[in-house]
Amino acid sequence: MEAKMNLHVCALALLLFGSIATVRGRAVDLVDDSNDVDNSIEAEEEKPRNRAFEADWLKFTKTPPTKLQQADGATIEIVCEMMGSQVPSIQWVVGHLPRSELDDLDSNQVAEEAPSAIVRVRSSHIIDHVLSEARTYTCVGRTGSKTIYASTVVHPPRSSRLTPEKTYPGAQKPRIIYTEKTHLDLMGSNIQLPCRVHARPRAEVTWLNNENKEIVQGHRHRVLPNGDLLISEIKWEDMGNYKCIARNVVGKDTADTFVYPVLNEED
Image 1 (cartoon, one colour):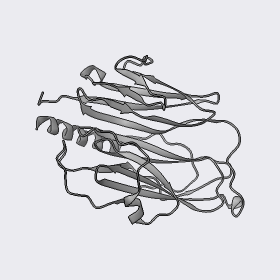
Image 2 (cartoon, helix red, strand yellow):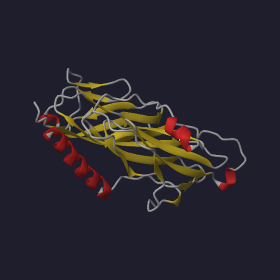
Image 3 (cartoon, rainbow, N blue to C red):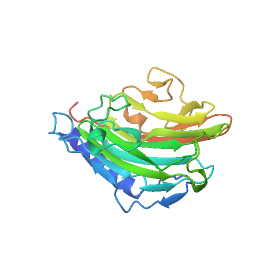
C-alpha cells in the first residue's frame, strides 16, 4: 500500500512539474500554435484491473497544435507528450481515420511489462518533404485500457499545391523523435529508456549516465542496437539524469531522461 502511495505522490508531483516546465521547441511556421484549445480525445475506459494502480491513467502534458502551415523548403516537427501509468506508447497516424478506427488501431510499439511504472514520454513526427495538399497527423497514446489522441492538420506551401511530393535532398542532422522525459519505477525493476532518431545518414547513439560519464556496456547497463538504454534491477544510486546523444556528419541532437527509483515498502 505504501509503495502505491509513493508512486501516486511522485506522479502528482511530476504532472505538476510537467505543466509548468518549459519545453525546448523547434522553429516551424505556425498558423495556430496555441494550446488553449484542447484538441485531445479520450476513449472510454474499461474496468480497472488488479494491478499496482486502481485504474489505467494517461494524460497529455503537451498536445500538438491544431494547425500548421508548411513554409517553402521547411522541415516540420510535430511534438506530442503524455504521462501515464505503466509505460505509455505513442504512434502517429497519417491521414484522417474515424474515432472508432483510432480506438481499435494496433500499436506499432512493443508494450513493456511494467505495472508499477509511471512514465512521461515524448514523440515527434518529422515531415521532411514538401506537401501537395493538407494532411492530418494524429498522435495516438496508449497504456493498458486507456487511449487518447490529438490531431494536427498541416497545410502545404501555397507554391507547391497540386505538384508531386518530393523528399528534401541531402543529409539531415539527427532529431531524437522518441524518448522519455521521466521514468519512475520500483527498485529492482528493469527499465528501458528509448532514444529513437530520425537522421540521414544514420546517426550514432551514445548515452551519458547520471554522473555525466559515457555509459560502457556492462551487466546492468546496455545500449541496444535501436539506441535504447537498458538498466537492469535499478537501485537508489541510479537516480538522476541520463542523456542520449545522437550524432552524424551533419550535427547532433540530445535528449534527457530523469530516472527515479521508488522504494518498495512491501519488501
